[in-house]
Image 1 (cartoon, rainbow, N blue to C red):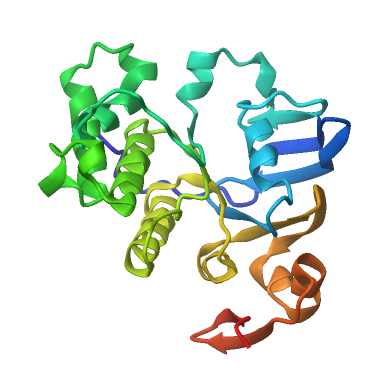
Image 2 (image 1 turned 120 degrees about the horizontal axis):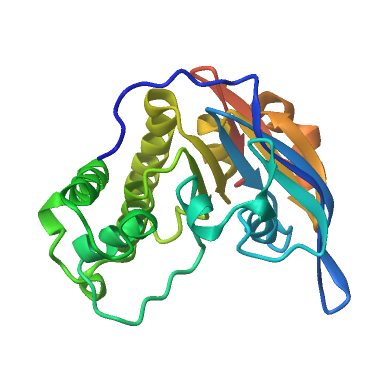
Length: 266
């Protein structure tokens, strides 16, 4: 079951530090000497244009991708020193594309999140975690549907539920709003915000819509052409000068209900 006891976030402590990360493909640096720190009990959004290196960076941070240079320190320990099963109980990851070649129901998919604990022999406690994650993502009524019967948004919510069932304190999501309409995108971001505020989770998310980053993040990491442009609090990033540097376009900023909204359609 999801741990519903509110945990006070330790917002002054870094849980993860990536130092001088570099990744090279075909002689080109797609991530070039990037260093970032992520605080406990926060949402950190990674933004930037296509090809900026966002997915590659979090792939190295999560150990899904081998880094060519640099180090990642997680809770004071080199991330490469963790055994895979040990790390899977601390960090859960949703990749940008998820291809499963067997026919599964939502409930079966979500149960995969318990593998680090159950090794495929689910206990009553494991199924309680599965049920909680399904309810958290409002999937109870369709939990017995097969994935190939779902809309893109329903399927994405099912994959996020699988991550939640893993019940880690740290969650990494690579473009989780893909295939979601406005309503469900807002629901997902509100869910992530409550996971941080109510349950003390720490979330890193790659997101394309800068307004979602602005309204729901604590910190933003901005990348362009594999390099770090700027990192900091939302108000340090969501301004005309910084956004021009990131996206090479003029973006007006409106303040609505104390939130900075980017207007980039004109």
